[in-house]
Length: 319
Image 1 (cartoon, rainbow, N blue to C red):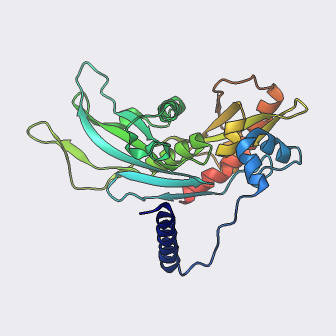
Image 2: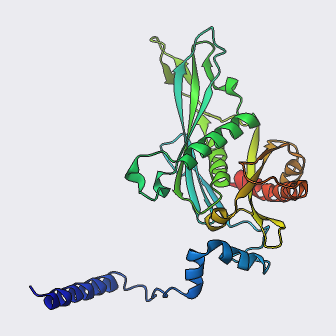
């Protein structure tokens, strides 16, 4: 077959593919817009592109500097899990699930229950979910979520004992990312806390073999004593040298900003309105490397976090 015939054959194949796609998508008359010069600048010079917007007092997605993306939360999304929740934070989507697994203890041990956390970001891997590797980002998030939950002290492990010195429940928390559109830490922690709040502990006892078996009766809610809520900021150094906070950064902003700060409020379960509890809640700061953050920015971030946390707490408690 000559070169000209091959080209004509390829053209016919392309025309057939276009016709098939058109028929299968007959309900949509949308046509993809061709790339623009702005798209080229965005891809080639991402830092310049972002600074162009920041200098005008706005962000590329039209948000103000202290404006978070739309957040939605649903509980009970995985029917076979003991507790579950999904969170959409802008283009970041995550599902968290809890399973309760009994394990044996000994009289020489304290015998409390335990919490184990695993964050899976394989679906966001550029090489695809089948790559089988555990990314540094997933390992870092696993450590962050685990340390935050344990450091906040919201899960009294002694309440997970089935029989002292014999058996207890292990709370296995899995956090799975469907998409990472930025600010994965806040989304992961929010989904994790919502899944724990959705969890019920079944009544159980030991049978004649010493195995843990569920019994009849009502399950009890996971005995959480508080709610850790995180609000993260990217820190951008503007052209004039001034450092600018960007709340709830997108993936595009994270790629350009070399420093970040997370404010985690540990909100008590009781004590008045959401605003009152968040306004007085103790906090933890997480600063993963990068340039030092001026105290003025830290103070500003904490104030913004307390207001945002009240809205997220209401979302959690009403879901």
